Image 1: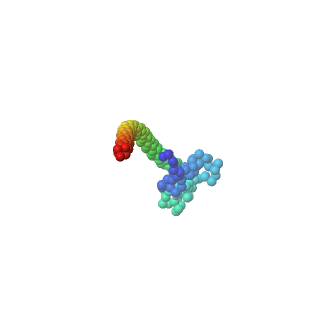
Image 2: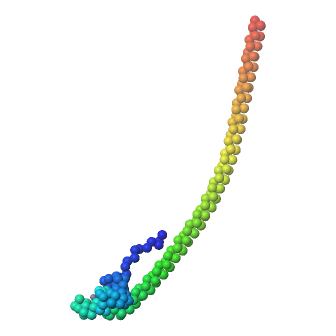
Length: 192
Ligand SMILES: [Zn+2]
């Protein structure tokens, strides 16, 4: 994701106005092509490094370029070629630095990723441990609640039984008393 590249800007020589590509093209054209093939280049043996253009001998001494750095085509070609190879070396160095940086970033990313995986596993284990503990506590609690419930039910049952016994005994006492009262009444009426 960090491999997004910026649009490449055309290489421009700091001392010259035209992009280097165009300067090199015109210089190479001048060197390789015989003047009779391109008659307009005939006599263009000079080069203004300040403006980045080919000049005829007359142009090279004209007022327009008198304060500029003017040299013959072959020297200009060598000079610019040297400059370009310096730039290329510098760019290669920078590119290596960037590659190193990318490797470092990749290493850092991988190490963070590994750490995440480890942390996730540790958290998962902790979670499972906690879950087991909670389940154990829940089971213990439900067993003790069940026992308590059973004891209370037994107590209640005993109370009901004792209450029933009290009612039965009160009923028996009442019946006895009624019977005695009836007997007493009968005896006293017979005695009259
Ligand atoms: Zn010039």
